[in-house]
Image (cartoon, rainbow, N blue to C red; front, side):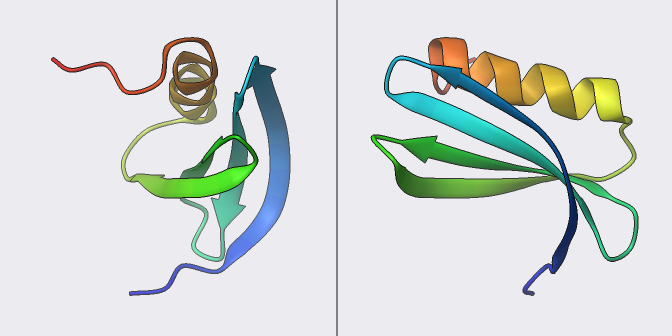
Length: 68
């Protein structure tokens, strides 16, 4: 299912990675992840708040995918 990203909230950058925090059309937080300015993935954070999405975006920018 395609999610329409409605409201841009924040952006986090570190070295070659960045992530954006969005609200979709249903009020669900979504993070959009990039590496070397290329889109990698979107993560939909159902049931979580803005702080959760901000932390997810910051974690991606600082560390990339964490294999746990």
